[in-house]
Length: 365
Image 1: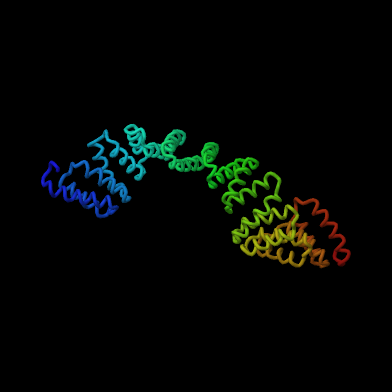
Image 2: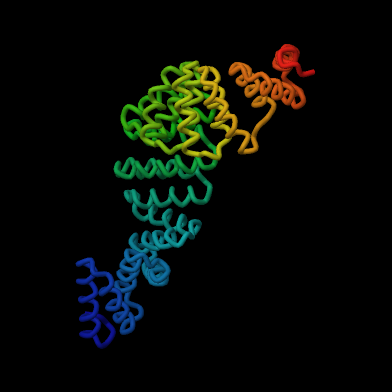
């Protein structure tokens, strides 16, 4: 069969290697192809087949010399050019791979895989605008390849090119993840009204914690926090240990003057992270509004223990002690507040008035 001798020996190893590769037994095919090349070093069929098997076996560095040799032998054939491009891509040699994909596409204008590889190389070479027509051409030829456009959209997003990314993501209205990305980028771009439609669609199709939270934030941004509350209730239930989410939900409730509900959420946040002074601080404010003064003092104690007490906390402690009719303690804290405060004229005026009255009532001057 072959020009080189011993022909029978070459045939035996080649046929065995071919059968192994057909059966998907690449680990067994590889040494047989290597044996063929020991006997017939210039055999094109052994180089191209071994290169493909090694590539399939995730050994692109091993495949490279064989596919280079096959291309040298038959530069006008599609297979060695295309598989060399695939090997170079796997090795991260994108400039060389792009050239090989372009050559493969020239040899076979119907090769969607060559167009796709060409585009993917250009993306990795930061030539995203040049890459787009190749992705689209590949998808036109083989519609199942359209999903690869999402990696180009992600590349635009990673490079802070939201308009280009959004344009591609909008080609995937049936994909909730793509729709979610559109909404999130519109939110980041300060366009919450535009983001709402995309995020509502994403939540309807696939209600993840991320897109529900983003939709809630969009509702808050456009001044409809009541629509955000049920979403935040759901996501805090599904992710009960998420401190930041819990605090956000609590603050939305606080701003809606839902004091009791906000206090419960701040309390839960403080349970999740007992060292978070902000949670205890917010909790104290809600408890004061709810006229739960002993509990408010306990929360203020935690703020102080954590070294986060400021003039505002001193004022709240003073007014809380005052309401509990603990006059001496209240007087002491009003005075501490006045010594510490420099930027709260209304509270300072109130504190000075209470100090005068409490000094008369307690006999302290």
